[in-house]
Image 1 (cartoon, rainbow, N blue to C red):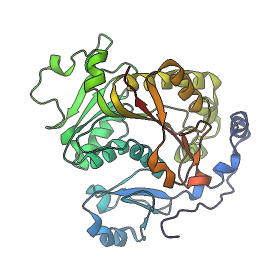
Image 2 (image 1 turned 135 degrees about the horizontal axis):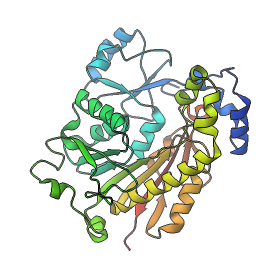
Image 3 (image 1 turned 90 degrees about the horizontal axis):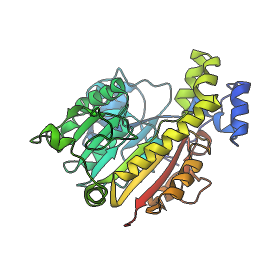
Length: 350
């Protein structure tokens, strides 16, 4: 069927240490057999549809629509787009379809004020701004200044910065005024981002829980730091880096424990900044239960005002239900995408 992506198998062997990791986490190694044939996905910037034939002629490849994802196309994984005129002029940008699904799950509406709590490297940030159009605002936060600088470059390249502001800050404590002594570092803001005309004191003003419940963010995305074991491109890099580095970066149990603590803190702070009735999406590109369902269950046990809700758009997505009802999993074999876990929450009145 047109628009339906089917991944073909690859015979690339996985190291024993990684196979053991998958086994311990209840993951089927066959998920990874289609890794090398997972398509490359791109988003066509709104208003550029008429230039599609020109773009196809330049990359010498027919772009096929992703039937379940508006404005998205897929092409063979070996096709490069970075040197193309369309990419350099900001008409297309690369973003995996599963990552795009996490953004769509937010249900962005005109006028929304959205928070991307782990914003770098910036593709999801750009998509949120594309969906907002000429209203609302987006705040992007990331702890790594050099990675957030890449997000700033993307915003400027795609002319999406007018309604965005970027802060270098710890996402576990970020607020309009920080919870620690050192202010988060504001490195970019557009003319309609809600910063122009205010003093530094106004921008970093402390807000209490009552104010947040009324005037917090409408939508929050927490695409949390993880071990990246579900990210196809990330795992493929170890073939070049050497599989021995996999143990330190992905398989180390102590690191996984640290990551799950961080994930819960990010989810907790993102939810704190959400207004009543707002929606938060939690996602990771890990396929392990510890970084996904376990984090969600622990969070729900600590927050009576949090409710896990169904992702309506997900009914037509090529994914499967995760262990907890209303949560979803993408993987290369089921979805022909990178691996991703997605859960959506709303905040109830206290």
